[in-house]
Length: 120
Image (cartoon, rainbow, N blue to C red; front, side, top):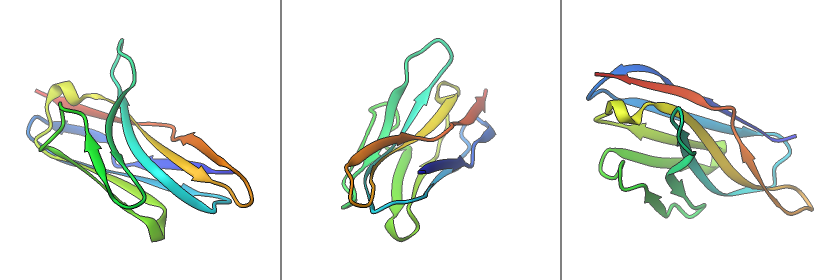
């Protein structure tokens, strides 16, 4: 069983910072791409940032220059450093990972989500 557990969400004022973490655990052979998505009330889930196993990244235009995604392959962990937060960043943030299981294929997994609230 593979689990993704996020942490680091919370309430912060406009201009503040938060760092999200997501640890992948379970019966894993390796992890390919990892990413962070978010879903605000009444809106569809959207990609925030994405990182390949090699470390190549891409970001939503709305967060470029403010957010940084990184990963530690030895710890099966992905991070999202969020700076200069705005009220419009308020959402539930979800971790996503493409996990290759031992002697098996790649499967897509999601975390349970962590709330980020930015007050004005």
